[in-house]
Length: 291
Length: 164
Image (cartoon, rainbow over all chains, first blue to last red; front, top):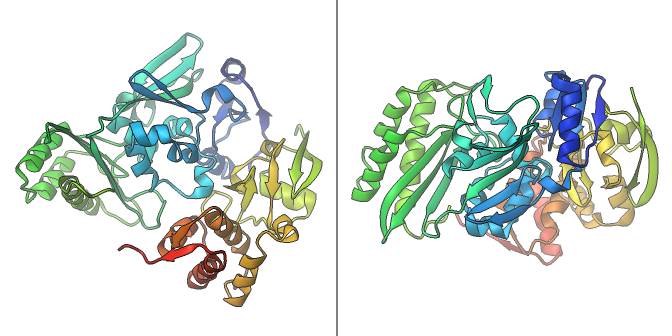
């Protein structure tokens, strides 16, 4: 449980970081908050010969507004995001999600950029970024590009991030003031990765629900939306008849590659998703409920 | 490997030492400064026994490299004890027998202090939630929650019943 021998680099700009990565190639890993990478290093699951520590690059830390988007620098910690008034005002679903996000000591170091680079199937930030249709800003030798969070990772070895590239920011569209969101997780210990989890946002026009987005996470190989299910459940919200919600959800997940964990079978996870969907919609239907 | 001289403020005292990149902050503090309060537990960020305070924030020491302490302000139980910052919390842990084997205690004290600092209103549920990243393998949680709750009362923090 001790790291192997390592070289350590501490760039102070994105350009320096990119140059170091070009020099070291796949023998180096970027070190963001380290809350997932350091366990892998300590367990020698990650064989990096060099860690390029991003913690001294001030230009990619912090939260600003750019037009219709909230821009969160990649090295912004979970704690800073959860304490941000800008986040609370413009993308409050992140605050709801934060309640479930690990523990204080981890929130103080872990970063949103690191979380998206890893894109853990049960992590809150990738799911939230898909929910609000965020864009991921990536910098590399060819300059800056943006990629939708929803298609950023398509499978284990298929992510839109080159060996020579670095995530520098996340751009989140502002939520509408009338959007209502819930984040529900079932976990064995508060703050641990969920066995099944759901984020949902309902959008209303003239007081009537007109849109529903849902992301299930901790269930499959990636956080996922199901567009057919979203339209079925939007209808359920509009009619107020929630009797079929669990059955529709379980059926939608039958076509999905649900992954069992140590404690829950595939069937159990599908069932839990149905339970979560029912709870989420009941909360979204009651105006005064704040998750 | 390439060890480098780093300088930082350790328990209020400016120090310098040789840091090797592969050594995490806890092994570094224990071996170079003979501090025994930061524990080497799971070494993968689950148990919370390695909790230390860096720049005023509690963190997992096993997930931080020694090199990353360069230029920072580090506090461990040794320093907080000398300064008297957590004397009431330590006293309450003893009074309530919230220390069994003692392995998790450093992390529990630092996390408890982090919870109480700046709090105006708390509940037992909130204490449990804040301590959820710290394992007590003796399972002495009830006494630990009692101790922190009693300090909240003594510090004039309002203690409410859980809503649910």
